[in-house]
Length: 222
View: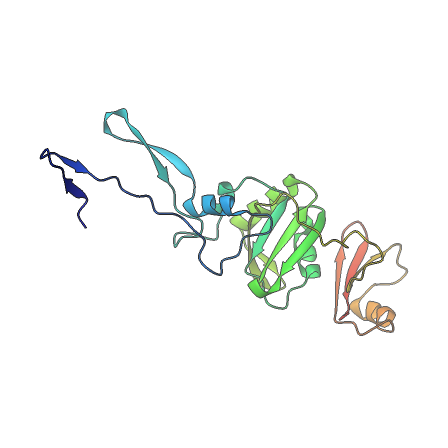
């Protein structure tokens, strides 16, 4: 159909172009804490003023963060406002919360980790934005490995990870134990911790990391 329509007076007028509505493709999930408006804004990208001849300015949208031009580098980090929550991608299938804590605690105190195993992604909430800044900046300038595989980082649209209703209940179940060892009299190894923890139940994994003393995470199947 032509965009030129003929009027009775013999004048021609160009029909207005219709803007295409931006929608999420079927099956594409919103990130934790992200609503449809922010998702649509993310699909469009950043708005920029582009000068035209005669001084006229038109709005121009930069490359979509979901488009083919997206790269796993620091450029995307500047398209989302800094947040204490970092979105981690490219994880291996067997990764657990303890692996993320072990790899990322060097950037600052981690408050909460939410795994998305089927997407091989996770959300990591730091105590402050400064720690998240360090994490995103480091991931943009050099390779950061989690459980032996390189991961990619960006700020999350969430300012805080939504906890389960029983997350703050000390009586609720949790299959991962955090151990803090103070003033050890002999070297603490995974074998030592396995000997201590296995009588309680079958131990799946043990991760030891050192920061302000010796700490370890012990994972059970229940």
